[in-house]
Length: 130
Image 1 (cartoon, one colour):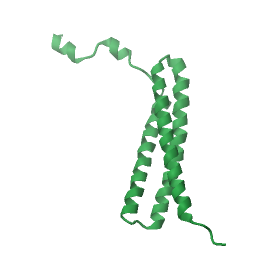
Image 2 (cartoon, helix red, strand yellow; image 1 turned 90 degrees about the vertical axis):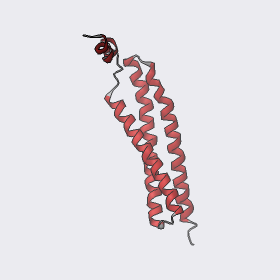
Image 3 (cartoon, rainbow, N blue to C red; image 1 turned 60 degrees about the horizontal axis):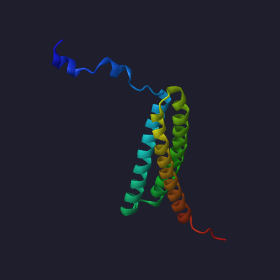
Image 4 (cartoon, rainbow, N blue to C red; image 1 turned 180 degrees about the vertical axis):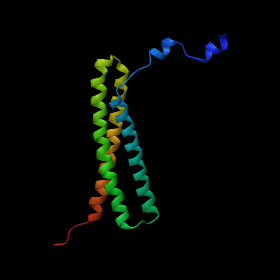
């Protein structure tokens, strides 16, 4: 084989030394990424809806969906933190511990969005008439 053809393919050592993580961890990370994007999109939709004068029912529905997605985001962040600690031991790779700060930041964002959406829903309900 020519020198050029050998350069195009990675050596066998690099192929065999690829990190193999759990399928559950990778699926949980992808689900968290989806939920974070969904929460951000719902927050932007709320802001755009207030600016463009959406109906009140639609705004309330957006805020309720934002609350649910924020709670799910917090739960998945906890799952990722636990999985990264648990899978560090059998894989013997401390690189999995990088996901703990990611989970903390994601949980903090979810908590902020949850408090924001529930606060707006609480304020919009007003004081009940006696």
